[in-house]
Image (cartoon, rainbow, N blue to C red; front, side, top):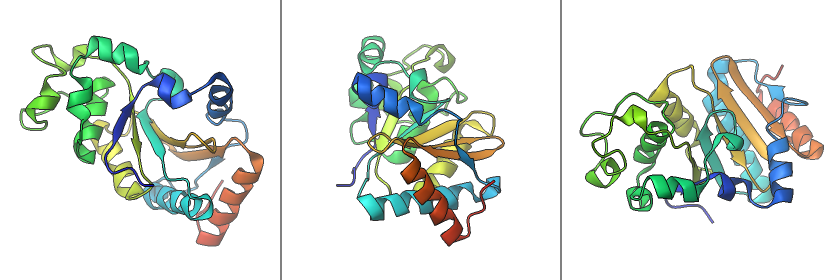
Length: 206
């Protein structure tokens, strides 16, 4: 089941139960992670590996966010309390719009132009300067067009702000920052499979 529209998520929804939180958060540690040799290959390499995971185990829901990981996010209930128009603003949002709004809410993007968002999205910032809103959240999307999404996330904020994408069920995450891309699976068997796929696809790993 692919996700038709990006959906907004808070920290609690991303991390799930305590057991899931422990396993999912472990995927964000640096121990045992692999790093791509060429930063320029990030979009196509991540897209290739995400597609490989989907074809192998039919996992098709990925979570995307700015920062170091899900522990940086606020809870969805806290976001709704601060931003009453949150749900309406993201209802059936196009992906580019959702990424731009996510960057704004995470306080990592410059103030948007007046035509960047439709009125339903602009209700979230109202008359307040965009920089005064700091409500980092995450998006849930399907496995398609990953390469374009990597470029879209980067283009919103420039090279200095890291972002990540992860599969909560399998405990796999990719982190993209100025220096390149790293990936890690919580389970070593899955990590080994990703490394084998990199070798098969000609993706150089350090």
